[in-house]
Length: 399
Picture (cartoon, rainbow, N blue to C red):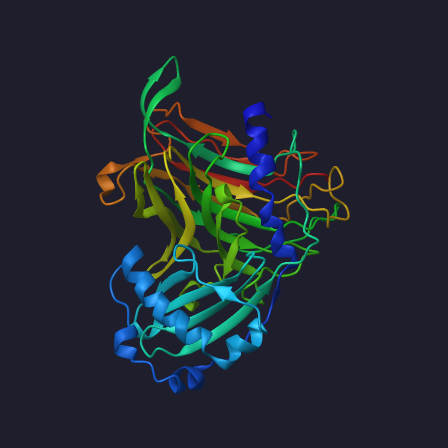
C-alpha cells in the first residue's frame, strides 16, 4: 500500500465502527401528539427541491414541534439536545404527496447521542422517533499498514496533465454514481468475521482524504448489532458523515420507497448546495439517494473548500470486536456476491454538461484502493478508458 494512502485508511475507518454499539428505540406513530400541538400544517409544508434556506426554515418549525412532544421529552430525559442548521434536516419525497416527510435530528452537546423524528410534510404529524446513543467502548484504529479496508476508486476532474500526472483540476461540486447494494450476506465458512460494510460516494480536498464528506448506505455484518435506524429485518441503513470535521456518522432509516435498500441499485450523489462562506469560498453539502420517483436528501454538517476529489468506495471497518479477525482487529467481509458501481464528477452541479466519467480520457487523477487483509477479500473491476463502471466481487479468502 502506498504511503500516501495510509493516512486515509487510518482516518476514514475510525468512526464507522459506531454502528456496532448503537442502541435504538423505535416508537409507534405519534400523530395524535403532533395534532395536539395545534401547529398550522399549511405553514409547515415544504415544496420544491431542498435548499439550505428552504429546508432549514421548514426543519426549524418541525424541530420545535418535535421538542415539545411528550415522546421527545421522555427520550431526552432532561438532557439538552440542539439543532445543527447544516446537519439536522433531511427530506423524503415519494410517488405521492402522502409519502413526503422531513427528518429532524437533534444532537446532544457532545454529539455522542441524537434523537431522530420523521414529520409528515402533508399533515405535520410526527410519524416515528428513535434515540441513538454511543458507548465509550468503540475502537479507534491507529494504523492501517497493508491491510486497508477500502475497495473502489477516487478521481479528480483533471484539467491538464504532465507526464501522466494531473497538474491542474476543476473544483468538484458533485460526485455521483449508481451503486448497488448486496442482495444477501452470508457468513464465511472458514473464518469468523464481524464486519459492518459501507458503500458510498463522497468528496474531499486531497488524495489523502482531508476534508472528507461522505454518504451512502451500510449494512451490519455478523457478530454485530444492527445499525441504528435500520430496518430490523435487513440491518441496512442510510448514513452521512463529515469525517473531515471528525463527526460521527448519522444513520437514517431508509424510506419505505427504498424497500430496505437490499439488492437495489440506487443513485447516490454528494453535492454542494449552499455557499456558507465567500472569502474564501466554502460550501455546505448534502447527500441524495434516488430510486425511481423516491428521493431522500440529507444535509451533511460541513463547510469545506477546494474540493478536488470524488470517492466511490466499498469499505469495511477495523474493529476490536472481531473474534477471528486478521491481525487481531481487521475483520473479513461476509460473502456478498458481486455489486456494481458507476462514477461521475461534476464541477457545476446545476448542469449535466459539466459532468464527466471518472476515467474520462484516461484521467491521470484516478486512484484505486483494494481491500487486501490477510488474503484479498474483494476483486475490484477495472475501469476502461473514458469509462466509469466497475464491479466489486467477494473472493472467499481463507478457504
